[in-house]
Image (tube, rainbow, N blue to C red; front, side, top):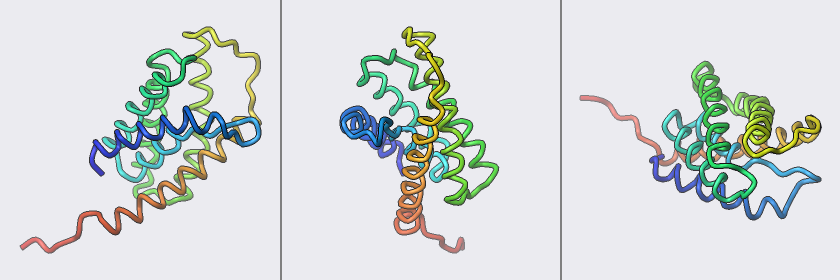
Length: 167
């Protein structure tokens, strides 16, 4: 996948997350589409594509959501994507179960870090940590990331580089 495709994918994911997903919550929570897609792309495609998705997706979320200061989502996504890439390197090539578990676990880190950054920069009050909501968001994010990783792997097998004998 080229870096342009990753950037356009992050742009579209941020638009969908900030417009459609705000109107369609599951219960009282909504999944983090940019986060889930970034985790899948980082674990399947690698460092460059994952970091481009994190930076462009975070920038677009910061620009599209009025309550977020510029840089909060970018920093949070870059930190979490870095941790995700460490897991991907340790389990290369990561299986779908590893992608799902990593996304679920890092979903808590993403939500907590974003909440702390918003509390420090935008003055959002941290009344209590809504752990049941974090768990539901984590399950939704893991499902989205697993499905995305499965599709990305299928596309790579079909359209990826072919193995040829070096003469």
